[in-house]
Length: 112
Image (tube, rainbow, N blue to C red; front, side):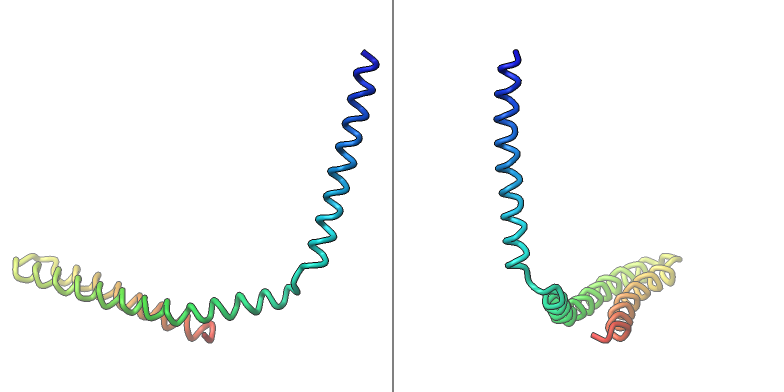
């Protein structure tokens, strides 16, 4: 039994030493090849700002499509003689205005 314990200890110690050595080597490699954090932040900032214009245009396009769908829905309700035509028109118009205002406010707030 004691012999098994000794063999296990030796094998375990050898494995621990190998794992510890590989961790040290990988940590040193990461330190040597790591980029400057500021460069990465500036690159991310540039990429996000470049996508914002396309995102704003996408929000305007979605608002236009919602406006057309809303206009058709309101027209159908108006022709059917429904009493809640004004409520539906206000809801669709409000959603379109919200999309445009959010895109404009975010653009002016963050200076993009």
